[in-house]
Amino acid sequence: MNNGVNQIPVRRSERLKAKQMSTNLACNVPNSYLEAKNSADWQNWEFAMKNELNSLNKHQVWEIVDRPAKTKLVKSKWVYSLKQSDNGETKYKARLVAAGFNQIKNKNYLESYSPVVNIESFRLLIALASKLNLMVRFFDVKTAYLYSDIEETVYMLPPPGFERLVGDGKVCKLKRSIYGLPQSGRNWYMKIKSELEKFGLTQLASDNCVFVKSDGQNMLLLCMHVDDLAIFCNNDEMYQDIVNSIKSVFEVHENKTSKFLGMEIVKHKIGISLSQSEYIESLLVKYNLDECKSVKTPIVKGEDKSFPPTNELIDITMYQELIGELLYLANRTRPDISFVTCYLSQFNHKPEKRHYILAKRVLRYLMGTKDKKLFYDNNFGFVNASSDDSWGNTENGKSFSGGVILLGNSLISWKCQKQKSVSLSTCEAELFAISEICKDIIWIVNLLSELKCKQFINSTVILNSDSQAAIQWIKGTRSSNGSRHMNLRFHFVKDLLEDNVLSLLVIFSISAISKSMANSAAAAAGGVYAAGIDLNEGEYHLHYLPVLAYPLFGTIYTYETVEAVPGNRV
Image (cartoon, rainbow, N blue to C red; front, side, top):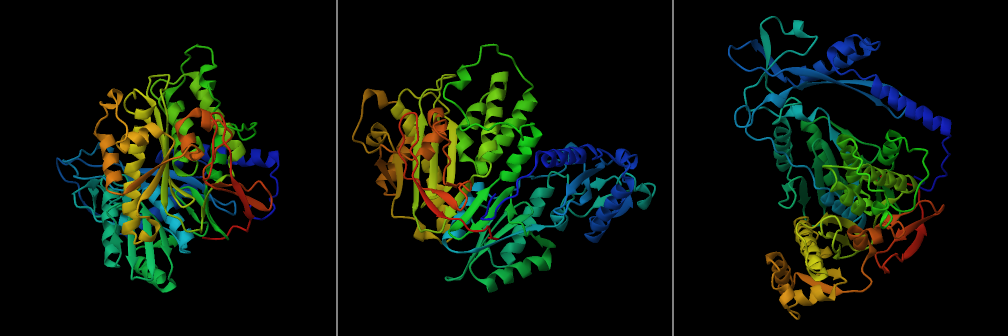
């Protein structure tokens, strides 16, 4: 990442050294207490375990009781990890967890579900922070689960290697929600939710992990993902009051690196950018592609049909792991690989070698575009959307739907999915794509309303589509025998139109963002990257505008150049 500062190129020998160090760290982590005791680093692991026990005692996680008769006991286990600090120091970590996988729902516990913030909600908050000039701060709660009480009666065996501290015939009766129990995540969520509401924050119905506090002029927004918190605020006094309240109950650590959920967040003069360059680099190292030659597109039209029909199968776990890692990127900051990852996901149950080669091509594409970023400018704009489809997948006849929702020029939500049924015409496929994006539009409009940001909602939300037939059918100006079978989902869109919630526009130069979500021709047309900035131009960003046109096998870009500034804390 440039950030306006000249980067020093890393020598190949240094990259190999870093790669070897990462490999050595992974190899030196023991899988059990006995392995840790027999390792050369035993003193470090013992010190880490004692620190963990001190933390558990501080939170009064258990009480020592006599072992009950005829009662099922939960085993305990040490989980070890090595972490590399910014100054190169190796940190030894040990966490005591309960082996709660043997617990049975409705017998040993009742509920285990706990929500996390929706990634679209987080991107919307980032967009609002840019447009409303909100400060953004990130925190994590140390040993979060240990703050929540446990309702069920659970007896746990003593920590391996430290049985003498408990005594013969004694066990640990849990008082707190230790890591490893199915219900611990939910107990922690209910605890922090209760505390935040005491501090005057209101939970949103649209996203149960987003909270808001507003007095008219001042606003504070908070979202959480388990023990990670992000706070957005425009008033220092309100911000400090909430932070002090949180610190009065929990031990929290403020992150100085501006990272959240694996994304790097950087403040620029004209907005905020999101990226995952570090994660991409780790994938390239993992798959031995850190020295590979990059490609310009994630997929080439027809490439999946160019391989000889050998039907050579590969290891299903290896393939699914790679696809999962690509989906993680596609769902967070890389909409340009959404179509290809969605396409390759349909072979998860029986992958062939050619599919794995195509997935590795996506990594080679990421090699050349790892510094690309989603950019959220500070210009005002209304909610708007585009949808598209790719009719008739050759594998099973099902079409792919693609759609995007923006706040002005800021990309909030994107979706690529294979349709659940076979569409009998391009009109029907387009209608399916429109109906899917409409559901997300309603959700985002409701979310903005609850956030008290109705100024970003126009009287009607504009949805762009390049299908005259679909829009004419929805408006009731076209009917034929071929459309009589359309199901109720399409009448749902009609109702939105009649209620003036939605306004449909026919445009023949539809946003290439949604086009790239829906078909390989557009995805392979020239590295479509939605709402991104490119730091490869020295002193300038290339700031993408969603005013695009596309021919059948290409994409025409509209750019503006803006001054690059050093990356600052958001």
